[in-house]
Length: 133
Figure 1 (cartoon, rainbow, N blue to C red):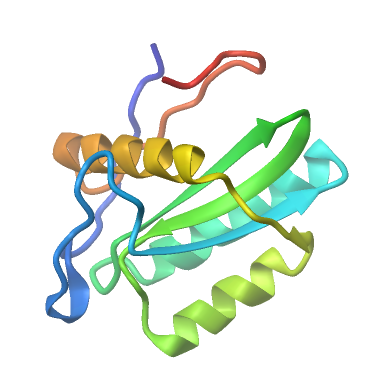
Figure 2 (cartoon, rainbow, N blue to C red):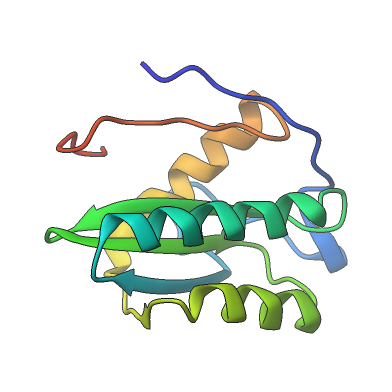
């Protein structure tokens, strides 16, 4: 089981919104796919740094995973301010825009909801080939 890494973060529902419920679609997401693991990894860490730089102001999570053997980076959570949305879009532009199936978005949102109960910043890492449930 992955060990969580805790870092400071902020409110769970910025702009007075209601946080996404477990099993529901996230209120916000952006996704990109990548031809290779290295670029996906660099993009994931860049997206994570952007989210962390806005800790206290936003409720977002970044994920990197393979879907049908294609590397993806996805940001899910509560809608961020327009400038942060644009910054994240710029980071994800290193890849190609991707459509993520609703079932996967629901799974990521459920993981995000569970992680926010554990702490304000939680990281979990899985070995390649492990199915998320």
